[in-house]
Structures are given as structure tokens and as C-alpha cells.
Image 1 (cartoon, rainbow, N blue to C red):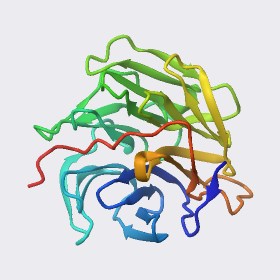
Image 2 (cartoon, rainbow, N blue to C red):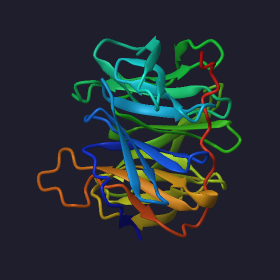
Image 3 (cartoon, rainbow, N blue to C red):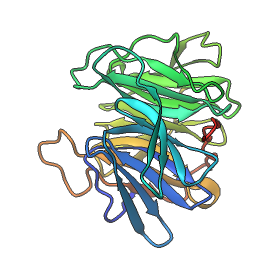
Length: 286
């Protein structure tokens, strides 16, 4: 079962990323324009205020530098100084912002865009920031309203992704993007939000509005369900020593009567499988 962690409430918590080098769990509170980091050993939470909403981010070779996908652009953020160095503007149509993102197994950053005004228009796309050229390209995948669930199989040859409004998680061969297909359909009241992959290649998905995190087998069947005290779980991650602790972010935004649980960072011990180290963006840092 999940338990709440103190002093971690977010309006819209997303994108939890474990840094094994510093022993910190990072995540973003998107509308509050804030990056946060928990040191589980001492229970300390650090906060960094940002000029724009932070949709997603990635670790780099330098433990003090993150690749950030702010609303309007991508760039490097120095944690110790707060300095941001822009790499590229947000691709896609006007009025979109960066949302979910994660590095592929080759160190490129695959990310998404969505309607910045949250009008649920299908104007979002999936993109990739090339780690060698630092140029962006739009992937040949369908347009989406609320893009989520970006993650990769352990061997890197399968990309998982979702439009939360469609109620299913899709996948395709990677990097060719061929054989686009439905991986699984959510059976419940929630919508698929963020996902991560464990060492066995099973997919963990947080359900927005479903009060649970679900582990899916390689064939898309439900392997395990962990009920959550949060109505809107947003993204899971396997973190900590041995990547054996399941954490999940959550949100309280949009709830008429949020409880103390809603928006909290939550964790569950002794899950059925260990996770994998987060891939780092391999692009040059200067």
C-alpha cells in the first residue's frame, strides 16, 4: 500500500525522476513553475522556482545540470546557480507547451506538446531532441490532446505513449515508429497518465481519476494493481536503493474537495520488481 510523504504536496505533480548519483528524487509542480527534490534519507525537500511551467526534464552527465522542457523552450538548467541556457524553442503549433518527456536508450530526449490553455484540443504532438545535433524533430505519430506515458522497453526497441483522452496506451517499434498499435486499454474509471518501465519490461501506469497505479505485463494484461489514497495519480517511478521503492506523484488541481492526500508524493515498499536507472541526456553541455 502507498503511504504519504510529508511536505510534498503539489498542485500538479509530475515527472518523478530518480538520480542515483545524488540519491534524490526530482519532480515538477507544473502550474506552480517549480522543480522539487526529495532526499529520502533525511526527508529534506528542495525547491527551485522557474520562470515558466516545467513539463518534463532529464538528467545529464553532470549531476548539477538538468535538461528542462519549459513551456516555451528546451534548455540546460544549473541547479547550483539557477542559470538556464536555451537550446531550442518548443516545436509544434502556436499555443502549445511541453508536457511529458523521457530520454530514449540512446540518450535523445523524446517529449510531447499539448494545448497550453488546456482546452483539450488535439493539437499536441510527440517530438525528439537529438542529443548529437541538439535539433528537434516531430515524430510521425498521431496528434494528441493530452500526451503522456512516454517510456521505453529495456532494450530500447519499443516506445510507449498515450493520449490520456483516448483511455488507452499505445506502442510502436523504435526508432522506426513502425507497427503502431494499442498496447492496453484502461479498464476502470481512470485515464492513463505517466508511465515507467521496470527491469522485467513490465509497464507501470498511474491513472488520473482512478486512484491507483497499475502494472501491465508484456502482453498488456493487468499484472498488479496498487490502490492509491490520491484520486489523481500522475506518474510512477521505481527509485531508491536497488530501484525497489515505488513512488508516484499526484495532483489536486481541479478537485472540488481535495483531501490531504491529493497532490502528495506517495511511496510503496517491497513492490514485485525492481526498476531501471533513468537514461541521461547525452547532448553536449557547453
